[in-house]
Length: 358
Image 1 (cartoon, rainbow, N blue to C red):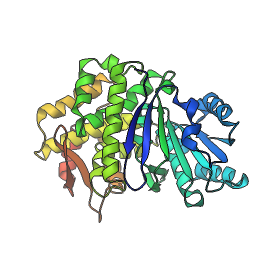
Image 2 (spheres, one colour):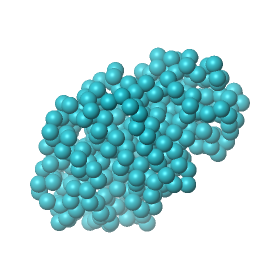
Image 3 (cartoon, helix red, strand yellow):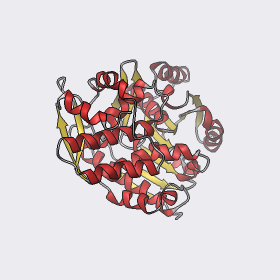
């Protein structure tokens, strides 16, 4: 499959998610003619790709590079300030552009930098990880972490385009691909059951970036998120379903000081959410077991130390989905049907956690 797929995100600030191979070579098409300067935000591991991208653009733009730390270490205010410093010293204007080249943490940071510089400059996201492609770079959520929790500072800011070049996955280590599949599985459970069927049929082909099955599950995941974001850009309702598994997952990331990969933490979070739905009486044992089977087939973790509960609970109480001091969890009633469990008693939460605690 070599053709290009375009998935539109509609709403007040519409844009396209463009999926295919060799797309970075035509990035200038997404930057447009008005842009004079381009800041490419990238992690150290993508230094060569960032340099190659700069070389492809220098005939049309003044191109600057901002190398930032890998993974969640990039999502700190000091790193954002480093990017702002570059922009200030080079007279970045409102008609210039930021390019996020990297995984989800890099695109979160790049988006935040673009959203806040001069109250908003053009942004093109180029995710290079599975989680970045299907989740972080799509939807216009940008942000950084603080000592108190993950993604507590940020803004909703729509990119001009999201360029999903599948060629960038060819050198990604297999464990990174599998970690990213937690977000793909999430999309399967909340609204695209075909994803689950594809993974269960042949997990190796589903996770092979060169296969048609891989592209299919990526496009299904992006399509789901695009539909949700089109209807609810600022997470006032429907968009909350995208947080399935993320309340506990983000708390685990915070407890581990972001040394766990996002997908590993979300995997445990989804099993917890499934157990919570089962104990609350909304979800069948079979669907809970299906969570474990699929996630374990991807070699993702499904448990976490029981003794960390109090720490996790305190972090969850500060979660961005909380309202008026009340914790809220996305749970499943069945595959493809979600609901909100608001203000559950701590005893109920702990009972669910005991099912993932070791």
